[in-house]
Image (cartoon, rainbow, N blue to C red; front, side):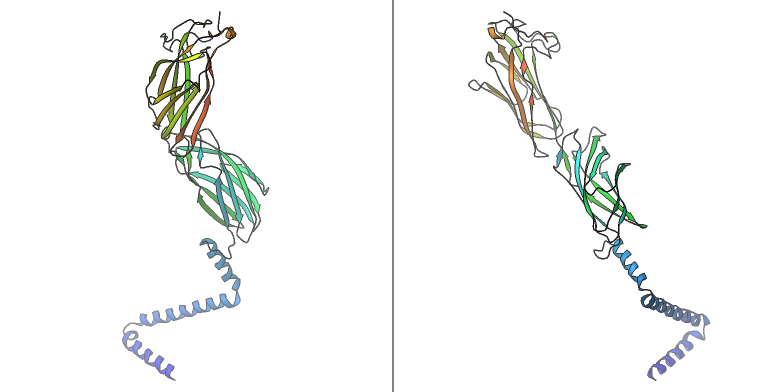
Length: 358
C-alpha cells in the first residue's frame, strides 16, 4: 500500500510538472524504463541460461590484461647470454627459454630481435630447439610450431652483427619480441635483454727497421749481419686504441743472448724500463684515450751475431706480449705478438737480408 501511494504521488507530481507542459517528457521516461528492463532481462538471461558466454568473456579479459589465472593463450620468455661484452667480429650468442603458460596449444610461436639503435644491423645465423619442435628461420625470425600447454624449452641461437655508422654506441641494447597464435587468438610479449658492451679495439704493432718506410737509414752496421760485428736496429712499438678508455697498459718483451738495449730511445708517451738480469724490456702507459693519440715507443737494439748463427736469421726480440684494462667492460685485454728477427719483414729496403754471414 505504501509503495503504491508513493508511485501515485510521484506520477501526479511528474504529470503536473512535466507531462502536461510537454508530452516528450512522458515519452522519454517510458523509453528509459523500457531500456532498463531490457538490460536487466539480457543480463539475467546470460547469467542463468548461457554461463559459458560469461566464462569466455572473463578468460579474454584475463588474457588481454595479463591476468595470472585462466589464460587461454600466454607465453613466458627469458633471454640470457654467457657474457655481457663482445668483440667486434664475434657473434652474439643467446639462450632463449620459453614456456606455454596458457591452457591451449600454441600453433605458431615466433621470436625476433629489435635493436635500439639503427647503427647496428644483424642476422640470425642458426638456432637449435631443445624440445625438437619444427623450427625455421624466416625474415629474421625464429619460428616454432605446436607448443603444447605447459610445455617449455630452450633455444640456443647465434646472430651476426655489424656497425652501419662510424660513430656507434658502445653498448648493444634492444628487446626480444615473442608472438604466439592459436585458434584465432593472438598474444605478444616484449622483454629487454641486458646491455652488451663492445670491447675496445686495441691493436699493437711491433716492427724492426734498418731503413725506415720512407727510406731513411736508421741503423748502423753491416746488413746482412756479420759474426762478431755489431749491427744496430730500431724497434718501433705502436699502440692503436679505438673504442673505450683504457688504463694500465703494459708491453713487455725479452732480449735474447747476443742482443743488447742501446741507450738511444724515444718515447712519445709513457715510460720504459729494462732489467739486465731478466733481460726484460717494459713499456707502460697509465691510460689510452678512446680514439687517436700518439702512443709510440722507439728503442735501439744492437745485435752481435755468434758463429752458431751463420746462415740463420738471428733472433732480436722474444715473448712479446701486452695487456690493458678496458674501463667500460671491466675486462683485461691481452695478446701476444710474433717474435722478431733480423729478416726485417717490414723494412722496405733490407727485408730478407737477415741471414748471418762470416
